[in-house]
Image 1 (cartoon, one colour):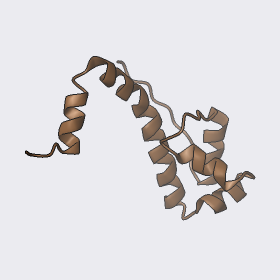
Image 2 (cartoon, rainbow, N blue to C red):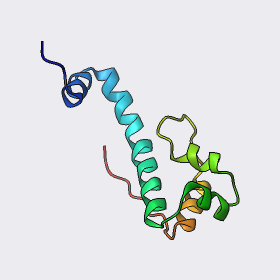
Image 3 (cartoon, helix red, strand yellow):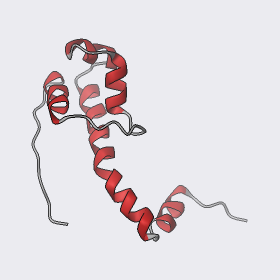
Image 4 (cartoon, rainbow, N blue to C red):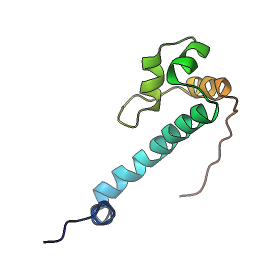
Length: 96
């Protein structure tokens, strides 16, 4: 019996409207967290170093970057994170 690949599993799961709706709801938060980690790494900073710059604890940076958290950061926190890594934020809205 052939094992299902992750890609095949995802394709099959997204055929279910409820699963697809939930997946799409999480996509933006997941992308944001991946971008945050990328910014920090491009800046050459560890979570500890970034926490020091932002006057917070490493655990807060870890939670902010984690895709497995239900924690939803405030816009001001994201702005502070971006500034600490040498970036500004630019928003873009697209039609559904």
